[in-house]
Image 1 (tube, rainbow, N blue to C red):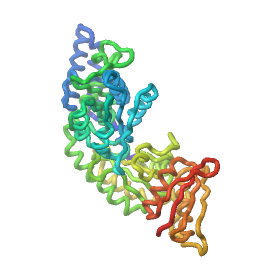
Image 2: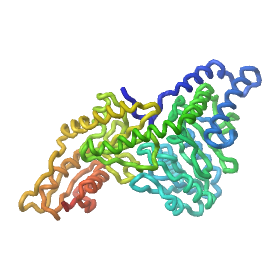
Image 3: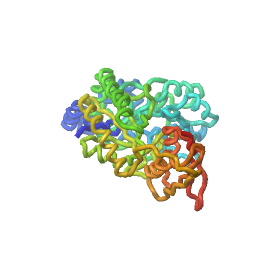
Image 4: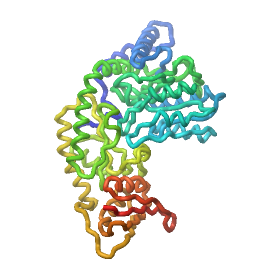
Length: 461
């Protein structure tokens, strides 16, 4: 098997493995105690904190270790909002944040707070001006990821941080995807990260709160980790996380250049190898090892299984995955095709021959899925006298509504319409995306009988 899902989790780095074993041998003591074993544990913990802080670019006393990246996000958002409750209750997030941020925003909203979700361009990037427009009196906190976890787009953190700083609003940066590649630029106020994203062990997160930021930890606390992360520290894992972060950062520049060449190869060649593909995400401002594309007329889950059988572990933001039947919120916010979505995220050390083999396998896998679904292979011609058509795709999941549309668009003359009845949520995103890819006009959405959506498409070519 070839593992191409590094954006989800990275295999344990060899340095992390060695440090983990050493930590288990020497770091089992209670770091809060004054006897020998406790002092040894405290020395290991302090050294790990110094190492992590140097990698982040902060003071050691600004950084605490928590149980995961998600826990860091939850603690960071809730603590910052509570610390600034006298300022107001307005929270700003982007529409493409990780689910941990969006879940925190939902909790805040359900408790009476207000949330502005800033939209993104088709590349997945936010506009600093849009964050500036969202700022208002009573804004307590703004949140922005450093890079997107699904499409790899790098966000303009430094510019957004400057806008927030001028308004006196702290910015929390979710740096989970990018911290292994380098420090986060800009005058940010809080930062979170997760060790399993850079080759550390799972179960270790970082929370950084700059000096001077009002912060009130929530929940039951104790004296450990500055009162911001209760419970006995997982010291062996913390030691391994810090050691692996230092190791990957030492090789980051060289490895980033190598992986960029490989992902550029995928971005360039996939549209030529596979017809009807949309490569998504920013083509320049993106993470080194991430490339994402969507394939028309393809069931994303089936395609992932086909690639798995061919020996490749990849991920998807498609609506058709085993965990959800709704489109990825990231792809929805970007307004790009969601069906048949594939995210290839290359771990450090990926071989060029593995990428070439993937490019050899992909066209056949996509063609096989399309054949099973009955996707159109040639353009249809208009039937004489036909002025409009109705496609009943109710009860059919993606990509079937789009496939049915593609089959009949040629059966109406230029200027006539096709009305697609579809109750799959993904159709709201995929039919307009299909129109853009195919040069047809998306007229809009209407409400049909029984409340089901009707999507109206006009043939223009």
